[in-house]
Structures are given as structure tokens and as C-alpha cells.
Image 1: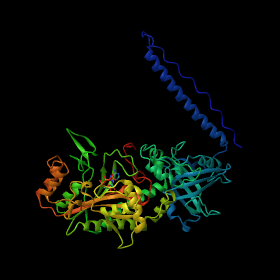
Image 2: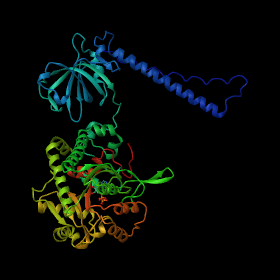
Image 3: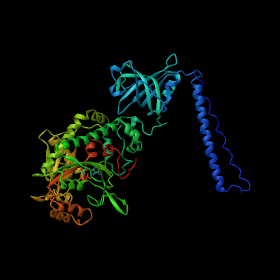
Length: 575
Ligand code: ATP
């Protein structure tokens, strides 16, 4: 039996303030305060040192006075710490490793003492890859001693450790671990970086659906609604978005967040892959620009030497300059900034834009065909290449699989047809929706539900938007100037892309700019128009896709804030 730990000694007395030097007047009030503060600081230092000493004495007493024969097999890692065994990863561990000595690094996900001689340590390597480790004192005191078990069992959760272990078969599969058919019999364990005394966000909670978005977005309401529909089991810990984002390391350690991040990166790759295969070339658009690219209202402005600069609201002009510069098909991936005070599950102040632009030969529908093919390639690619990630995400955020149209049955409606459908078959409040006014978000969602029911797809296109709903660079339909050759793409009833044919004839462009109440000679606009005056530019069109929305709506997440790496909103700029 080990002795109880020695009682901590009383804190040492604060050293008295130094007497005033000869000839000096007594301490001023300020001086006395300073001395008092210094004394307090030193007393605190002394108290902490005494506490450390007491803890060390207690540990020594608890471990008994017997020599620790395993002392070189555990402890805090130093730069010299090495383990000389085969390095394995949990993904690759197999029969060939049985009874072999291996080394691994990972985080302590869980640990528990089983009496004084044995501890179980669940080790997580990455994502949800976990294995059970057993550390048991050897009768002869090495390679594992009782002291070593005690030390290892007391390591804090989420500490990063290095272990040497023999791979064994457990008596029964370890259900709580992803690697359930093997366990590690630990012979060495070194703590590379300790976890904190108390975790701000435990892994368990980090891997649960976000419980509330309210503290991030007091006025929105909408994401909370979505979260209410999720089944969060009774008594399961869950945290608010604010707690998640304020604990970024733990938020990101959650397997669900890593799976979302992997899906996100896959979408980027599939986007680029498809366009590369269609002879598009990638280019880079600037973020810092001299004038608002999409109108002045929602632009971030900042001082720029002796003038001011804006953050790009889209790469629109630059895609078109590339086309003017003789690139036939271009795309770019980059940050887009919107100074919108929109606290909704759809909006960020910085998001990632997947943008493309291409020459048109005969009709702007060539662009729609291209983007439709692109989106279907992305959706099918995700289905095939991210099966595991999607399954994991659905286990936390349950959702119906994303419904794709059968080949050749893609849904393309005109805006007017969409409104008609809403009027005729939608909810009562949409009986009188007009063909000339843009749709509201609830209207879009209602139409999405109708289209799912009628056509069996979560993905569709609305074309020929009303003139008033599109920016100055959009071409009007030559057959009906009340509408434009412009379209939006939707996923589960929510817009993910806006695009259209652009005006390439400078005189027409100036006319439409004026029609929109903008001065064609205003800064930024003039330079834009001049590009079309400076050289003949072929007809062209394209679109801008919001990556955050594609990922979120594909997975039916309650908010784009979950698919963004570092969501930037009106209320959050950190971390
Ligand atoms: P919304 O009306 O939903 O605010 P928008 O019409 O302003 O969007 P566009 O300017 O057409 O959007 O941008 C193209 C795409 O970029 C959108 O379809 C969407 O996917 C994405 N997007 C636009 N604004 C945001 C935002 N604030 N946060 C996240 N994604 C956005």
C-alpha cells in the first residue's frame, strides 16, 4: 500500500519590503503599493514552489521507496527521446504486426486505471482512428513498473504521446475503437505534449452536432431551427457553435469536422479536374482592388498608403479580362469578400469562390451545359470518393442522400416556369408571386421542395432571370428584354451559383450601365468598359459557385459556418 501524500506545507511568508536607503525619505504611497505588489508576487512564487515540492514528495511517497526499474521507459519526452521500433499507423495495422513491437504517436482519447497495476489508454491517431492500449505492471518491475502505470494512467486527455507496444489480439473485439481486432500492450510511453487540466471542449462534445448557433448569431433563428430537427440523444454532451469555434484545436480534432474538411477539399479538386479536362486554364485574380467590383454597398474598404483599397467581392472583371486577353476558358479558386451584415446560415463575410468563364460559340446555353456537367461530376465524384466521410458526417448530422437527376433528365426551368409552379402547386402564400421580381429565400426553398417531389432531384437550374434581378454586365435576352440570359443553380432549394452571359459590346455595356443608374465613367467601371473598347472581345459567359454552400447543402448541414475552415461573419474574426 502506498502512503498517503504528504500534506502541502504552509505557504512561505511574503518577504518584508526593503527599508528605504539612507538619506531617502520614507516610501511614497505609490512606492508602498509597488512594494506590496512585489511582495505578493514573491509570496505566490514561493507558494507554487512549495506546492511543486509537495507534489513531488507525494508522488515519491505514493510510489514507495522501491527502485523504479522502468524509469527509462516513460516520462516527459525530451528532444533526445527515441523509440527504436517499427513505425506503424492505425490504418495499416494488420496480422503481420501481431506479436511485433511497434511504435505509434497519437492523442489520449480516453484513459482509466484498473486497480493499481493496470491502465487502459485509448489512443487516437487521426480522424476516428483509435485503438485500445493496455499498460500493465510486469511482476519483475520492467519493462512496466507500478509507478509507470500510475504515471501513464494520470496523463491528461488529449495529451500527445509516443508509445512502444506489442500488437496483440484482444479477448473480444474492442467495440469503442475503430481498430477493434488488435490492441497495444504498451512497453514505453512518453508524453510529447500534455493536454490541459480541463478541456474547453471535449472530443465527445466536439463530435456531436452543434447544439446551438444562437450565441454566434443572435438574430438569425434559422440555423437553430435546423439543429432542432437533429436527434441529439438524451444526456449527450453537445456544445454551441461559439464553444466550438473558441476551441479550434478540439473542434478540428472531431472526426466529423475532419470529414467535412475532406469533402470540401474534394469538391475543389473535382471542380478543377473537370474543368482541366474541358481545356479550361486556371488563373489567379487579385483580392485587393481599387474600386468595388459588384457595386459599392457591400464592399470592405481599407486604407491603402495614401488612398483606399477594396477587398474583391468577386473575380468577375478579372475572369472577363482573361477572356479578353485571349484565354478561351478560365477558372479560378479564391477568397471572396462581402461586407454584408447578414447573420444567416447561408452567409459569410469571406467565402471561397469557384469561378469560371468561357467563350460562347452559338448560345449561352453552352455555359449552362458546361456547369451542369461540372456539378454532376462533383456530386458523382463525392458519392464515389467520399463514401466513408459522408457516412461519418451523416452519423452526426443525419440527412437524406442528395438526389441526382437520372442522366438526360436534368431539370432546367425558366424563372417564369418556376414562379408558375409555385403559384399553382406551392404553399398558399405564393399564389401571387410575380415573374418580374426576384425570389425570396423561403420561396426558393418551397420551389426546391416542389421540384424534389415532382422531378426527384435536389439539383436544378433556373434560367432567364428578370432583368431587374441581375447586375449591369448581364446580357438581356434579345427576344425579350424583360429577362436576361442569366441563371442560378440550386441545391436542396438553395442557390449555389449565379451566372449568365456577359455583355461584350462596349456600347451595349455602357447603355446597360446607365440603365442601372451607374455612371460608366465612375472608377472601376470605366476601366472595365475600356477593356472591351481596347480590343474585340468574343461573346462569353460563366458563373460563380460558393464552395461553402455546395459542401453544406450537399451534406445538408445546418449552416455554412460548419463547412468553412475559419468562418468569417459580422461577429467573428477569430481565430
Ligand atoms: P445571396 O443572394 O444568397 O446572398 P448572391 O446572389 O449575393 O447570394 P452571388 O453574388 O451571385 O450571390 O454569388 C455567387 C455565389 O456565391 C452564390 O450563389 C453563393 O453560392 C455564394 N455566395 C454569395 N454570397 C455569399 C456569402 N455571403 N456567403 C457564402 N456564400 C456566398
